[in-house]
Amino acid sequence: MSKKLAVDDRPEAPLFEPTGTHVLKAEHVTQTFLDDSGNETWAIDDFSLTVSGPEVVGIIGPSGCGKSSFLRLVVGLDQPLAGTITFDGEPVNGPDVRRAMVFQNANLFEWLTVEENIAFGLKANHLYAEMSYKIPRLIKMMQLEGFENAYVPQISGGMASRCALARTFVLNPALVCFDEPLSALDAFTRAALQDQILMMQQQAHTSMVLVTHDIEEAVYLCDRVVVMSPRPGRKIGELAIDLPHPRDRVSEEFVEYRRQLLDLLHQGGGQRGISASRG
Figure 1 (cartoon, rainbow, N blue to C red):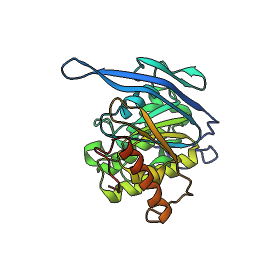
Figure 2 (figure 1 turned 135 degrees about the vertical axis):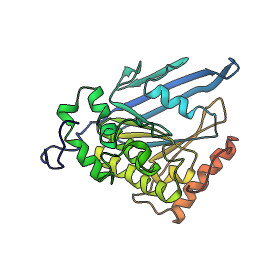
Figure 3 (figure 1 turned 120 degrees about the vertical axis):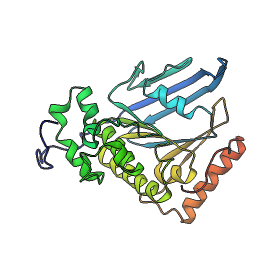
Figure 4 (figure 1 turned 180 degrees about the vertical axis):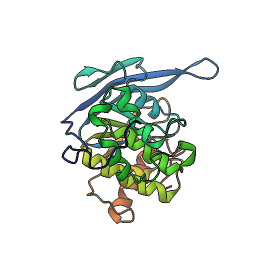
């Protein structure tokens, strides 16, 4: 970068602009994919979901039930075989800066520094001159100060995850999809980043769709949780989590919500690969 940014370059400018109310609507979505043998495999069957922002919606289900496939459809990386997906009434036909995705791996560019990774989306969307003032603030918020010029192999997994979050939120998306972004982290780091995600969601007033195998994570983060069946993934239930934040993981109410989700998974035959506790 040609200029070292200062945290107070534009103290009057907001870190997150209000994105308004946005509606994601998936209706009767069906999707297939080709397996390693070239055979067509049914991933999702007649799946519907509406997300009205800002809210956090979790999706849980056994491995291979189409959760990640659904997120790829939402952000426009793939197109459904049948059914429709719209965002604010417009068909989702490809990627859009308003809809972002955080993958299971941080997917940072190893040849770029932490600061350059965070700036990448701004430059790619020709927004760097207008919004670069956000970068040092996000570095501070994500506790990456002192590592601005470090390359990806020089930082920990937790730092890489925080960098990926900063790279996503610097663009002020209206909807963020999370594909198990914390699954490879230790329990302590994972719990800390769950709080970080909630803080950013509350400040940015964005909607989130979170795919996870961890029931406790779903109860801790989400306003409601959708349960999917084994492949082909169908919606078998939904549970609203009526608890204030911050949530107490050992409270009776929290444990009861966790039990109800386990019961829904058991009824649908979908407990394979599901964790009931943190980590």
